[in-house]
Length: 260
Image 1: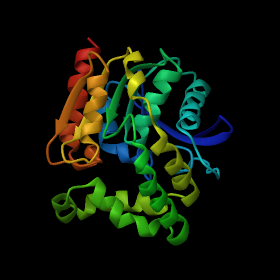
Image 2 (image 1 turned 120 degrees about the vertical axis):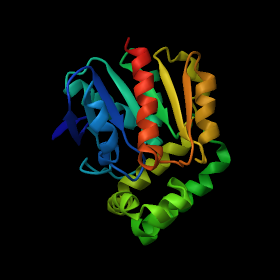
Image 3 (image 1 turned 90 degrees about the vertical axis):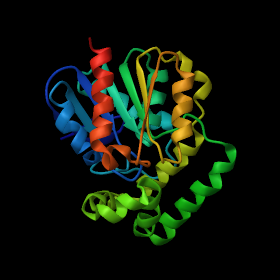
């Protein structure tokens, strides 16, 4: 389904019944990356998944995006659907959007799961992102598939489960260059660590133990009083795909606690 929000056409799907739960995907993926979580969560939630601006079936716009823009897209979608409050699960970029939205609109998000992500990037990270932008613009997304998979999954998983890695590779390859580049301008600029204590909703910070951003995800936990933290062994950046059973178990335990 599609609806018009914040000036663009946003693609979304809804599964299940219960309180609203919104899921936000990583850079260079789309809402299908949550399939194994939706199979579990739709039994107790009304699960809303959407494709971020410039990704999947959502409209692509050119130019530099900001996290405020992406958060406004999500807020606009929720408003169009009449959602007054929702739980939120975001991974990587989706978790950055969640942090931004929680601070922009207190009370909208009833809880947050922030997976494999960061709340602050150092200034010297920009050259890495600029290199990715240059590769995408000069060689296309196909040139980013293998190096991205190498960051996102552990080497043994890539070797043992090519059939599970392939759908993610296909999503990376299919991501519009303009959408990828637009988001690449937004993500390095995140700088929210000092404001995280303002988030009063329950938070679970969740990471693959072998993810390069594991320490940053733990910093989010340490910055939000009362938050929970789970580190999943034998998982890297896309922990929900690499270790879905452990990821889902952490979600279930979290929601069992906060929904009593």
